[in-house]
Image (cartoon, rainbow, N blue to C red):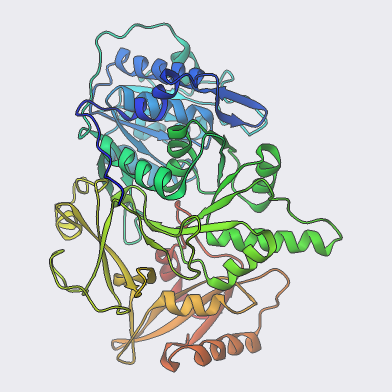
Length: 549
């Protein structure tokens, strides 16, 4: 049994993830790559400290929020680490999100400093100028991967509010006015929920939370190594990628490789050719798209994708159907460590791992965490567990649990119970201790008096060779009647039609209880996704009133 990691009372994540690598003599190792450019741990450390000094110089104080809204660029790293070293609280947003959503983040976080690319600052100009909390605005060039992310940048005008180029600030010579000391349980980072039923809420995390998960998951369970090079499909603002493509490689002295373009299969293939990564942070949808892209290349007489540098992939965010995993491993012979985590716990707490993969399951609990599967109506973690192979709600206990949600005590009381977190995810645990995902407890549908789990139907549809991605929702028929509608994205080259819709319905009937089949099938070119890359069921439900097409 592994001993749970402990951390000194005086503790800061910037030291743990970055500055300690320089102290260990690894300052000349490459911390980040961006196109043809490379940045050592020493350079990254110096620039991060430059940002911390700039925050203090511009009166951004300990415990105040710094909001970073950047593409995946190297300045993201020194903005994160400088924020943490200054004792400020990190919050992150998606630069491609709608302006109204970014305006919400500015107002909700009461940010004292903003780091963003010019297009974001210009879109938010009115909100930023009117902020009563904002003291500093930093601009980073919106660089493509073959451009210089530290180049000179034109500064947008925000009236009386001063706007500064981040590059000038991180390279300026400034002494600390006084040392900043943080404790392991000081607030460090706000991680945002997916916001499936409204605006995202921030889960409030301390410094120890991220170090704890890094030790028990990244180091002990997965075995991240100094010689790893990481690439991610999810973007850095999302906690999943903040961990796998920045925090985890930095913790072991490895290299995080970044690309700023939208993560299409073509952009990802270029990044893999550029960097030859050993670790890829993936999601099931992209696994399917890469396989289709590979098949298309080979159909044209090419060699297909060269993924030989990879030693494994992470997968999370949505279900990874066993047939898709089989296609992947048969074609590329690369392990996929599918797991589940949450903003409330920072990162993954149940996972498949080296030498221990059970297709279709999300693996076993990460050592250092404790998991219980309880009845849906359980009011606390002490309730009796459901039986073996019975479905219930997963509760998780571990030292990375958040303090609560900002400005939402009611939701906090339902989710956080001391050391325990009620995840809201439906699971069953088999006799060997493997966990099987059953969807969200709040997304179950009652059709003709019987419960239907959307994830179960979706996984069944994904087993059909024509289906690339899908989502099942309930559609109100009036009078309290609910029907089910499947939105289906087909694989390249498959032609939609009524006969295929019937075939998909029969496919589900033949494999599941008959009442679970989708009463309607709607074919779509693509499925909407939120800024975490997950299927946006809220957007799909908003479209449901239009009726079948």
